[in-house]
Length: 358
Image (tube, rainbow, N blue to C red; front, side):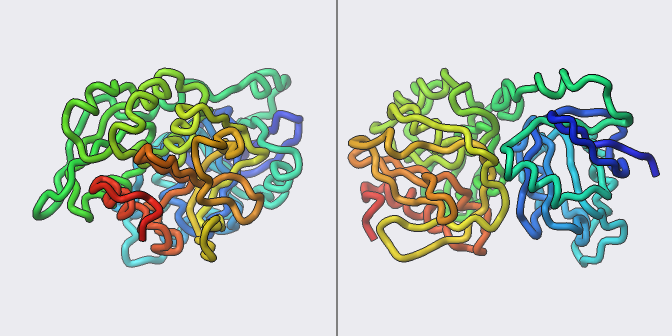
């Protein structure tokens, strides 16, 4: 076993054992609270530029199941308390250690993940690095910033997916770092899905006769995506739009709203979200470090969901614009099927119904 060191930007050092790729990495240190779903975490493009701490102490017990992947791994590093070497699950194909090595993901195990999480919760997101030796200078760690995140994970070419059976709707999905189950959720509902790179122009989406446009999740600071916001502004009100996660934030910016970086974000499969106009609280899957400021959209949009823990915005509806967006992942089956109905509401909207209609 080879020693490794997790070094935080404030100089705190955790000594552990290296797992995965044998390389030094620097990234933004974040934690995720999911008790399961580590494969979805490892293959979620929205973790680009980040070193992820799993708060659940034992990771890898059901091995690797490639059918559950959401996309290409984009995270820079991975931290676990204990890594299971002998997974037990009838679907398991191989151990997680092999996955980390094959995908070039540097990791560390045997560290106090609870203590690391407390540091992030109390002080906010902090940069960190995984090293063979403790560096003499912290400058490289402190200076790190996530840049060109969407550009780094978005599809490079357009691609089309066909459902089994009759095609009921034609939907365009703008890929800012889309998770695979967004496409699968639309296919199950009889949609032909055309996936476009983040740089697609509004004219192309509007001129091809799509029934609706979906704006996907993705990594990084939403305000960095100036050109994408400009294109979204051109399609709002002209065609039904449903935005998820980063798509939710970009839509808010296109409508004149503001976003803010959260102290430590929401990451995991157990985030409670309250329906503002109803009595339901949904258990949702989330992965984001920024939030929409609902007050910045007064008179433009209506807040439809809020986070039950901290009251931050989790969804907006834009009356007369044929558009609604959510901060969480309705395709992620966290509840396990709590918010999948939002895809149906989106498809209802393509038939002229308003979001609020039952």
